[in-house]
Image (tube, rainbow, N blue to C red):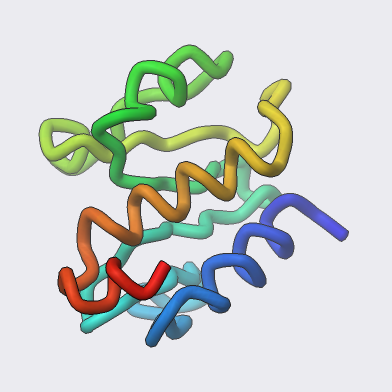
Length: 112
């Protein structure tokens, strides 16, 4: 199973999370109509994107990771390439969960 598939599956286990395709075949995972995970596409050389505060510096330390484009980087979004030497999957799950907590309503964050 690919990292992308595993991240998607994990993100969809979070309370009220759902997948959406706002830009053709570029999938995102949302909660309360807000994106918390950009899934990107390894086939097109893009990475996944998460919004981080606590783990922001750690995510940016991954080779090739950059602040997300289109001004999202200023709000804490980081794009991490799938082709990098990634941390263990439990760390990636922590990043997805942190991103979820930052955009989800507080009532949902408390369910985790």
